[in-house]
Amino acid sequence: EKENTAGLRIDDPRRNYRDPNEKVEAAYALTEFEHLNGIQFAKEIAEYFRTVENPAAKEIVVRLEAFGQEAVAPLFKWVAQLADDEIAALARSTAAAARKMEGRHAHWIGWMGDHYPGDKGIVFAAFLRYDAVKPGQMFVNRAGVPHAHLQGTCIEVMENSDNVVRCGITPKN
Image (cartoon, rainbow, N blue to C red; front, side):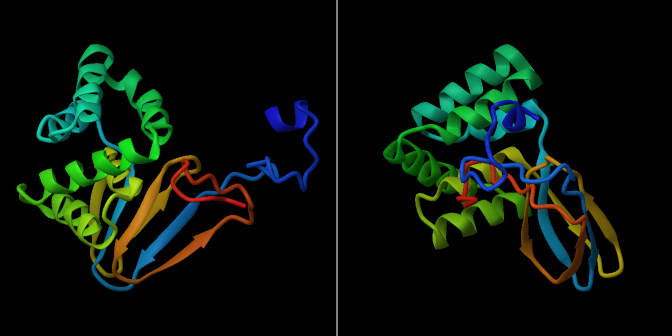
């Protein structure tokens, strides 16, 4: 609605939303399927970043402890706007911390660090909730909820929409 009010043409490259439809996705796992879906609770995010040796990670913890869940969305945006060298350093530190942890979520963050060193997606992965589904199970990615497929095969069905927002992690246009 904001883009329409601002008078942006439908084909304007600055637009994120080109149609009125939400982008809800339903997925059916054909194999064991691991993914990140939705934001973790502030307490879980802070717990993770307490182990990360980096000034930006310490700032994340301070803000989460002070403001709780209300801090998560602004922090997501703040991290996306860090300078390239700062986000790369935070990503490397985030992956290094994950390599010392147990569990599949930490495994994947470490894996991302090994394969995509310094990539900002590593930091965002620490904000997201890990989930695994078995073959034959379904899951839903609600409109506006960040998610990432990690491993496995699924059939994904989504509404007809061009409203993909990539949280600043990858370019849209």
